Length: 380
Image (cartoon, rainbow, N blue to C red; front, side, top):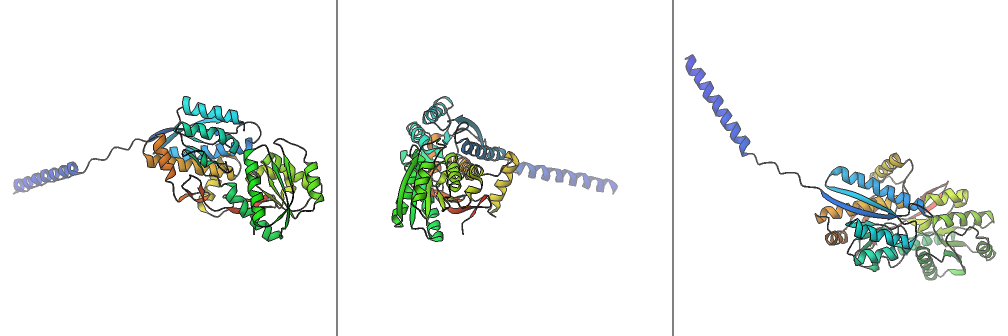
């Protein structure tokens, strides 16, 4: 009897092992992990010279996004960063180096619209996707089918800021002030003039200045003598901050509406209390309760010891848009990446919901901000 029980147990164990091993063999083999998409992406930014605060924010935003994307392992990006110093010839040389020597699959940048006017055609002719994150002048994406931007153009931002200011302050008479030696500031002025005409505002005077100018007393004295209800100004942050400081010092207290160049904390840093009341439009509001925005602000502050501005946020989103398009393309190929980028719709970034239109330009809504208590807040 004992032998019978022992025999049955042995048979049962053997049967169990057979069934178990058979089941193990029957399991489908695990799929090998997909190889990551490896790509070199170029960045052209202002690292030195005037406008370096824009470039610092942009490169910081890109690096933060790069680290997040690379950590996931599906797309691995090697960044190649070139300094343009805000100069057209340097931006062009940087583009040529990235396209021909570095063989990048795409370029993010350059910082200024006048730089894109030379770098964009070079990239387009070479079949390299290039995306501006701060190039807001008219005509940028019309350069060619390989040229993109995720920066809200002046043509969308300025009507929103002027519209709010006109309604709030009952503005009827205005003075226009702009830098006439830069594509970006000239484009902002063109939009300000156009919007003023549509709103039937009386333009009392149009004053100009040059990049790097330090004294604006002549322009501001004339403006003050005409007693406008507001000043619409298109400038980069260096000139913009000084203009505000000098205007307030000489008693010109009317509201200022600024173009996209004023959307930097550097304006407040330069102008200090004189920046109070400055009105701008932007896709970015760092005090938003959106979890995505809060997460980005916390990561950026931890990494760089300061809060991100609009330029950092736009660059951060641009890199994620680029990485998503690479993933969708399935390969680091310039032409396929271009098509994948062009198909981007309803991307949810820290700037909100974003899409490219048929001309690879921005589809999103601006937010109007005003400087109060030394910081940008929602304009109510």
